[in-house]
Length: 465
Ligand code: UD1
Ligand code: CA
Image (cartoon, rainbow, N blue to C red; front, side, top):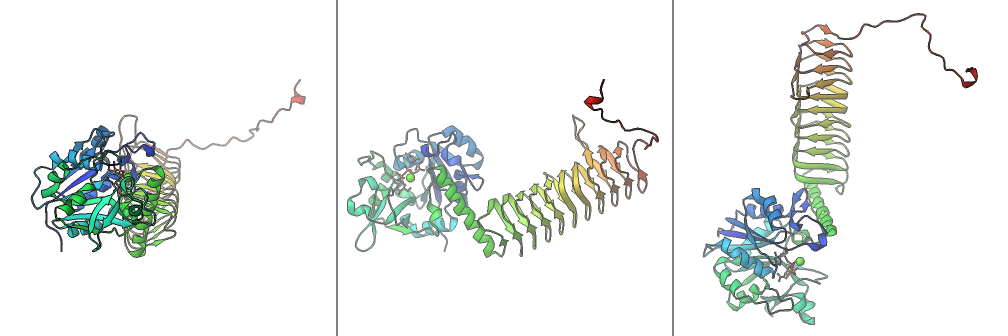
């Protein structure tokens, strides 16, 4: 059963994050290559929130401009008087509050709460209150959940306000909370800061709900890392590892062979066909798709790349916005820059760089070449040391190499230029005019040999007069 109530989301992100010791506002620090706040905004979007309001304070203008493209609304909390006060600041932006609506409270520094957990929370909350709680062996620092004899939530008590007995409670408040929109303004208006920290505690709304006869339902996250917050670089790194481990486990569930699930980093979305294998130390960024049977060698970096079935990427290759055709072989030490596409069975070998180049089926550039802004046909062989001179210092020009051409080693193709179908370029050629099909074209100083020539002989100091 899925909920149908109108949903609005408030993301608290006004805190300073002093312990990050960084000029960058805390919520902009990345997890898996994406600002923490963006993970939270994406979670709100996955719930089809009608409106998302981010409460900003420290570094407000930096946070706002960094997130401007997300379409969220911003509310300013100029001084941080507590989580309840922060939500008060969001209230005008939330108006009008739909009578049957839900308001979900999330945190810019708790980036990895999964949609499934949040859906369960909204479902459990219904027209009451929903709260994500967790049982911790060491609950120090957290708000404790006080329940009555029947097990119903009575209130939350913050550590600093708790009695000795309450501090022994292991069930803690994660902070993630769903509130009925119809009570929000009244309850927030009734908050006081008469507590140990002189703060307006959002958590006091739990007690108010109970007093008003509104039930408080709790759910637990599927994984502890879903509710983990980040206050330091060490926690940032710890959460990054937890997330990478989770993604690695998902891949293995889907049948991917990982040489070591602890040595893979996915910063985006990696989609794999059957029988994909990935060696250690690889980084995947953006949207990467690996077809059936693809093998990725160690220490490769792939960003926004599609690798078709049966292709192999060997060690230390770097691919960015490229398409690798079926059964192609890339690397070791290859670089495919944006706009490069390899046809079926093509080979790009060591120290070969391609940029904005289409390399046709079965074509090969196996060693030490730069092929930029080129259209290369099928079954073309590009020799070692070949360079397309695509840039004249002002403009880029294209090189066209037709099917079955053979480009000898150490050749420069001065674009714009075309090598005809089946043409051969002799080694060392500097091609400045089109090479006709089927012919041998060579530009080379004539070879000459001098007989009777004497190699200079080294003079020794003692020989000098
Ligand atoms: C809060 C909860 C506590 C819970 C804990 C979980 C309250 C009163 N307490 O405590 O029950 O166990 O989180 O981590 O809510 N923020 C603002 N404006 C403010 C204050 C905070 O935007 O005025 C933001 C912070 O940037 C942070 C979040 O709210 O992202 C939580 O604030 P924090 O001060 O860490 O709350 P805790 O004291 O840890
Ligand atoms: Ca905290």
